[in-house]
Length: 320
Ligand SMILES: *Cc1c(COP(=O)(O)O)cnc(C)c1O
Image (cartoon, rainbow, N blue to C red; front, side):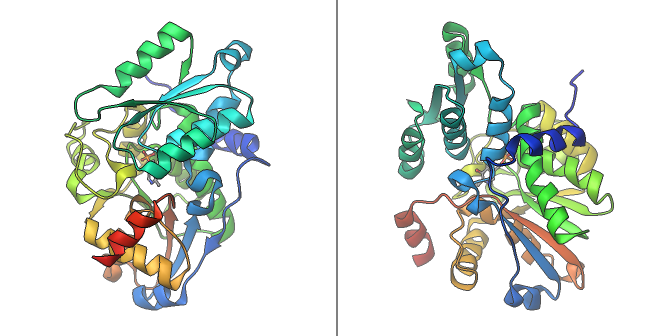
């Protein structure tokens, strides 16, 4: 039996993050309120330290290390933002970090991870098993493995963003959250069920990789091949044991968005709100836009999960 994290763990995480993570702004847009005929509150985690909510979970997890763990350091595997989050958090806490990244990860993310002090090891996403590489290193060098989503301290840390959103925006009728492996969604679920129990909570993943939707609707974790989508932060192949249990219990539904819809949202955020949002960060908003009829007159939350996109790639995507 897994011991699932609770809302109390989210509150403890918020205490550890105080003075270290940014309290990101909640932004509004008259244009979008008019488009949806609703009140929309955007939680801007693209403005979080290192450019995504992942700093929250990583810093919370590393803050809980004991003396021996701190001395040995941390290892993780990630396609990008979790890597940067672990590297930055480790540096801030005076620890060494080893990051296992796919050799086709965006160049900006690899460079940023090294810039934050992480030691990067590259692997082939299509032929090698990153979790096995991570476990081997952990065993050989005594490192502590902190995975990108399926860990109670990571989940609790990610839940602090939604806690801040409810504190700043008040009760919401619906909340839309990007979904990869489910760390953000399950942490958000803990905060939502404690602070706004009647709020409908939706996870949103790329249409090309809807393993979360299949899992949610079938009641057991579905594994898929690495999906081909521009949403590189949500190219996960399956939900985690912890994240799936919480999602199944607390989430109302899992929705999807296409790459074209994500690009439309990137354009909207850049031109109307002056926000650089990475493709994955647009998932929540893309799904909300498609539900206009059900959302009329309501108070809607959207978590913008991150803004780490190589500027050349950003321009190329918008030029299409
Ligand atoms: C990691 C990530 C996600 C997905 O988060 P999970 O916790 O894996 O579901 C969404 N957006 C961005 C920007 C991310 O970095």
